[in-house]
Every structure is written in C-alpha cells, then in structure tokens.
Image 1: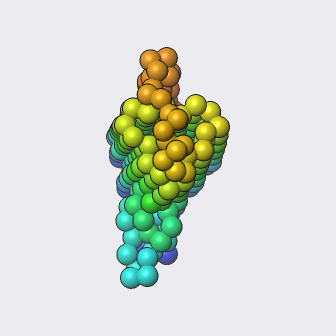
Image 2: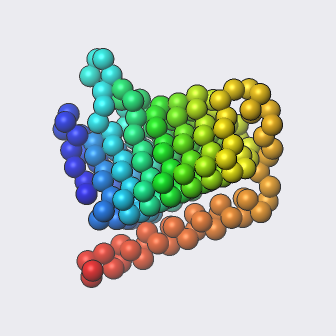
Image 3: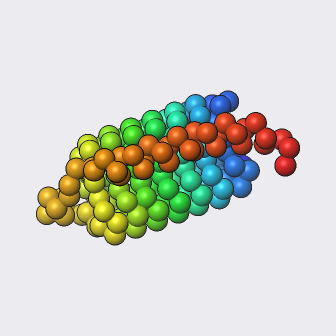
Length: 186
C-alpha cells in the first residue's frame, strides 16, 4: 500500500520496481529501478524535525527489502539504501542511516544512527548502534558494534560471503521482474 504521510508526501516508485501488496510505504520515499520490496515490509518517512523538515528515505536500483523489514527515521533524518543491496527478513533500519552499495544485511539485524560502507556484509542478528562499518568489513552473526573496540575485532568480507550476497541480490532482482509480470493475475 502506498500512502501519504501527514505532511502530504507520497512515495515515488520506479515503474520497474515491485512492491508487494502487503507492504506499506508511507511518505517521502523514493524507490529505484528493479527494487523488490517483499511482503509485510514497512517503510515510513513521516516524522519531521523541530522546523518541520524531513529528509527522504531512498532505496536505490537493484536492491531488495525483504519480508517484514522496517525502515523508519527519527525526526525526519535521511535513510539511504545503496544499489545492489539486500536488507534481509525482519531487519530494522532506523535513521539516520546510510547503507552503501553492494551490501548484505542479514536476518533480524538492527541498524541505527550509522553508516555501513560499500561491499560490507553484516550477517544475522547483528546490532550496529551509532558506529560506522567501513567499506568491505564483515560482521559474523550476532555481533554488536557500538564502539571502536568492537570495530577492531572485525575482518574483511571473505569471498564465500560476497558470493552469497551477490546471489541474493540477483535472485531478488529477478523476483521483482517476475512479480511485476504476474501482479495483476492473483
């Protein structure tokens, strides 16, 4: 469902993107080409700062927002999801937040007030709160990053994790195309 926020902003969805009918997109949102937004995802750009200002939530081309993902932002701060990026099932991306290009965010992960660099992999059940993940870094499952000491323990992305991330992205770009083709035949 696409709907206006209280300020009157309405989502803009590229014609090649697919938004599942159970997903909710509300407000100042831009969805790029070939994006797949899965069932029960909720993306809300509806809060403003003390001056009534709001930055958009932007999801760039060939990315996927999977089942049950929540993307929201405090006080109208920006959220940007890069190109060829996967946000896996039931994750929360809460702005201010920037997720780079070619990034994989695993199941049930929480990102808040952070920046995840290009080509990073953040596996399942991680929490990144108020600290940036550099380009190409790898977080194994259940890691919490909240300070420099936590960051120092991280490694670069191994090839098998990169291969997995790329296969998820390719699968979901394909899903967007196939679901668009059949969307009026349910």
